[in-house]
Image 1: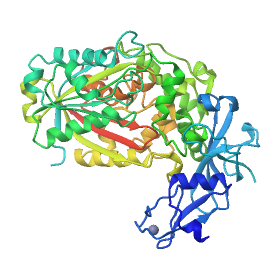
Image 2: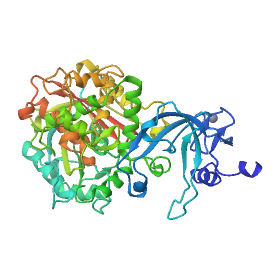
Image 3: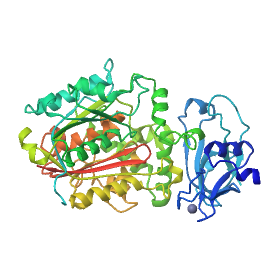
Image 4: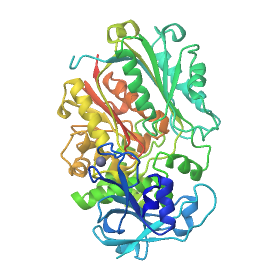
Length: 134
Length: 390
Ligand SMILES: [Zn+2]
């Protein structure tokens, strides 16, 4: 973990962790605030004493939509569900919801994060996470 | 200080909204400027106008940056300083706000405020891609949510929390199309039925095509001056008596709730406070109905009703043209159109027409106090202004 502690609290590093199938957030050691996406200055108290914490990736669906008209890069997936999930560890995260029929998605349902294999390609080439029923 | 005008609108102009083939943004802007000058023969643009603040969201549409001085040139304002403002769909709302601050500072006697966007010459896919830039890239766009999708997330949450229905949202479209049918400058000048709206294809459930505003071309322009100078330019000035602006996180997912816009509530609070007025004093409003749910949420954020009652307000006809609190008499973004950079100023234009009795077939009788509510993106920017007949 010592190596992890030295990694910058940046969006780029967040996605580097996603590549390793982990959802990592920055936690302020002064006020305990958890920041997702990470920032290198605490949003609540401006402290720079932070540490990486791994989130469990489980949570409840707060709200969702079914995207029928999709941007070109997601067209092959439409219609697909996108939702905002409140993670058990606190923060919210937006992602696609897979493994459940769109008409069966319900607010409040229990979800767990999973990861797509990294695609590479042009900038920013970030890997993607998504949610599925727990 | 309370209720004392911050600035006055000496004149206003608006281009026709809609599909304006063969015209560039600067030419649409000139069309709006021309109307403002025709309405106000006493203004000498080159001599009187000391600065231009102009809203314009995207340089991608016309492959054109550095739009401030370009538009100042076309308007005939050189060598006046020009500032182009980008705040997504609130670009010209913020430009107007800067104009108000410039006048209220005492440093300027007369400024021009404008807004323009030329969008329809690009494919819908391109326009949608450019518009999506108003949402968060790494945590929203990257995960497949579209711009309508972000408002759909709010709609689902609103339906779940308050029982708001798809019918109530569709009724916003029906109302605004009816108003648009009375506005010769509107993009869509035809009525739609509730059945048509509900049967339109799904864009991002629960939002359907008729819940979404169109992609439009258009421009608007206002000439602002000090309240004590207003009569030099016009017999019928409109005073801006309250003004507020606020910011929120760009990511919808980061917010504490999805059924209201914190920035809009804060901007409204500031506007009411500076005006020394309350929501019940407002007689007419132009609100940011980029999607029908946004108009319902606007009623609540502006205090026209309690949280959760927005759907009922449109259902009961309270916000219809003949209701007790007409909203979006112009047709709103939904029917008048939404050339994003022009919208904030276009809202003020409609309030000016209504307060000075020039709104033609959609004129509401006896209105003295109006309000505009302009939202940038999914709510990271909001501007609210309150106007009084001079
Ligand atoms: Zn802290």
